[in-house]
Amino acid sequence: MPGKVVLITGASRGIGAAVARRLAGEGDQLALVGLEPEELKKVAEDCGPDAGWWETDVTDLASLRTAVEGIVARYGRIDVVVASAGIAAPGFSRSMDPDVWERVLDVDLYGVWRTVRLTLPYLLESKGYLLLVSSLAAIVHIPGLASYNVSKAGVEAMGNSLRTELRHLGVKVGVAHLTFVDTDMVRGVDEHPVFGKVRTGIPLANRVYPLELAVDKFTQGIRKRSRVVHVPGWIGPLKIFRALIPHVVELGSRFSVAKADRAALADIEARGVAASTRASGAGGLADAEKAAKR
Picture 1 (tube, rainbow, N blue to C red):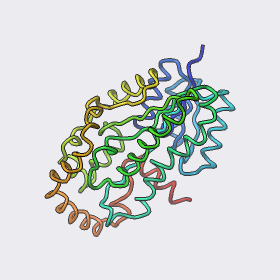
Picture 2: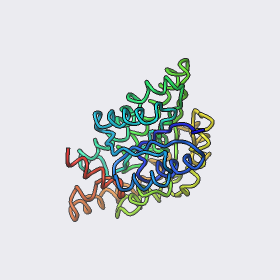
Picture 3: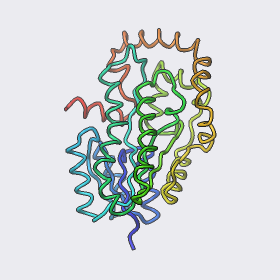
């Protein structure tokens, strides 16, 4: 008997793709949504004959609606939605490309909202599970990633609100918080000549965890319909100290940020603002190319 129908956004690479492969191996039917059709096709092939893929930009409501309708037409239902599409663009707010700053919110925050809006009617029918992917960035606000911090804090707030709004209707809502995991996006940030060094100098953000850990935690969360998923587990207790964390970040970065600010301006002068502050990794490049065509 086929397992659950699981829709995953951002399924071309990284956590979305890896979780899709794991769930497919456990018998679920995967509906993969994202950019980069060749990568999506490869992931779908890994997920078996029941998997389908839809090239979709989560910033385009019409495109996303077409994908969701296609998924329902093919499978007849949606049981689980994992809203994991996201990009990160390193840069200080005063000097980075403002269009890129806003694009991060459009993908990471409003893209999640559009996903919720369009899939919720089907989750209500199946009394399903919705997992919104936030980040440690919602709790620890790393300098040089302001747009990402803002978007992930918004996703957390959205999930917390939806959890209460939908509980009596039988839909469970989870929010995933994860620190830096070994993905293409994180490697792209670390390769930045300025901001890779900023991240590695901040406590709680200076370690990269294996992708397999995230896959394990996400899969467990989906199976248990958990209200929170923490990758790694110490993020849960860390939330208790939210009021203190900004002071710790400020203290730890009081010397490094001034130096990085000068370096960022020099990098923009040398490479141009588009190259210096674009979204990181191959997925970020694909998103930038998509945005440029709109």
